[in-house]
Every structure is written in C-alpha cells, then in structure tokens.
Image (cartoon, rainbow, N blue to C red; front, top):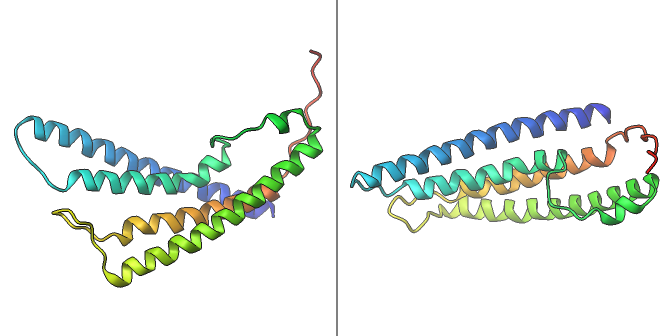
Length: 165
C-alpha cells in the first residue's frame, strides 16, 4: 500500500498544479476583462470562461487539500485523545469522507453524462457546453475518494516524545 499512497500523493500534487494553472488563467482573464472594459470595449464570454476555470480548479485541488490537511476540520476531540484512539477517529472520519466522495462521484457522473447526451449549453450569448464544467466534479470526487483511501492506509509517523508543559 505504500506505493499506492505515494502514487496518490503525486497525483494529488499534479492535480493541484493543474488547478493552480486554471486559477491563474481565470485571474488573468478577469484582469484582462477589467482592463478591456475600462477602455470602453465589450466582451461576452470572459465571465463565464473565468467561472468555468475557477470551478474546475476547485474540484481538481480537492485531493491535494485533503493530502495536506488544508480542509476546514474540527480536531478538538482528536487533540485530547490518546494517539491510537485519535488515529482510529481519523480513519473513521476518512471512511465517511470516502463514502461521501464515492456517492458524489456517482451522482455527478450521472449528471455529467446526461448533460453530455442532451448537449446542454448555458443560456448565455456564448452558450458553451455544460458537460466540460460538470466533468470536473466526478473527476475531482474520484481523485478525492482515492486520496481518502491513501489517507486510510498512510503509515503513521512515529509518536513524538511528550514535551514537558
């Protein structure tokens, strides 16, 4: 399982790098839009494109956020538990997260496939297809589910000696 954990860590880092590029592209696009419009010009596609990029980056960054423990979590209980019980709690929470991600991957996968089949488009002037945006959801949830598996099997580092407080 050590190989799986390190592979998932690398995939999480790669997905985060792609998410960072998408987010940077959205920021550049919004900056361009502000400058372009301040010169009296008009465009009709940039807001929707920026939203697509930001939403895609959100879902692709999810596994890395889990890997680095960057999500919002309440760890007060785990803080006061002995290390072995805190680890059990961490694994139990990871199983709940895994089940949630599997369900959401399935549900958003169905949603994405239906949008693809119907050829759904947004109601804007640009009218891009919706399924590429929706595809980021099941991909992000599958990657996050796999990262939860990696967190469940991640080796526990050696316990640090207690400090005198």
